[in-house]
Image 1: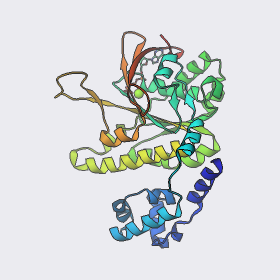
Image 2: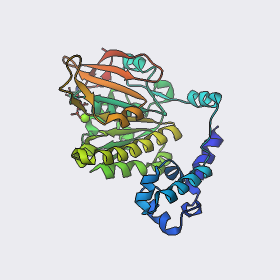
Image 3: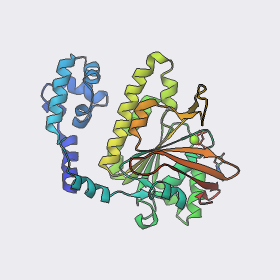
Length: 324
Ligand code: ATP
Ligand code: MG
């Protein structure tokens, strides 16, 4: 299975774009320059995307996509193969037993996990905690790996990492050396930081990618309803890249998300995550975070493929995330 993954990986990277039927050197250049630099990106793109970026007809774009698909092994896997893959899944600890239990053991590799909540609900605190915990050995709930931290709100604080590392008697300098922060200045930059992550992931054994927060730039860059479909298309592709990285490198993707209030809702909590259906479908686990009194925080699992919904309490102290 590992061999198979490697072959696919190699194929994807080493196939020259202009060997795909329908792509000449000019089109290949255009594709590379717009983020469709590998066969997989083309194989999973839509005809209208390819037609727009290459300035070619939709029919030609369809042919290109079809031949890219043919060049890749995009076939089925048996249930047994999927089971074998799932055995390799790492469950990254949150540092709170009850939070871990809520998630069936921790943040699962191979998945996108979304936490949404109002300001101060601990989305960023959790990001810091996971960036430390991923560096723990596997038997301690870590993944022995590094963290890629895409910071869109400029709220990464090394001082906080030091506090959390010290609380676990970890070497804080080493911990900071294994967290790679990319400050994203707008949504295109954010997309680029993820698209260029592949080499870094291999080189630095990255086991956790954080995007804090996913939507803030998308929301400010695409203002008004007219640009909403553009935004959702870009967002979709961005999430697709993240999900592909999670799957291919067996790593955890943690994204944070903002909320908005639904004023027309009469009953229940009117708070809902932004990002629409695109995000709803891309995240494997969705968790709603809330602030309670003092140090107490609430985490509610609202969507998971195989776990019951539930709610737990935990706390944030100077040491980081802890059980109540
Ligand atoms: P936003 O939507 O504004 O980004 P957020 O959900 O990311 O909000 P965080 O920044 O994770 O919120 O949480 C901030 C809260 O974490 C603070 O209000 C404080 O209660 C708590 N906190 C931060 N640092 C510490 C600390 N050193 N000790 C205890 N609690 C802390
Ligand atoms: Mg935050």
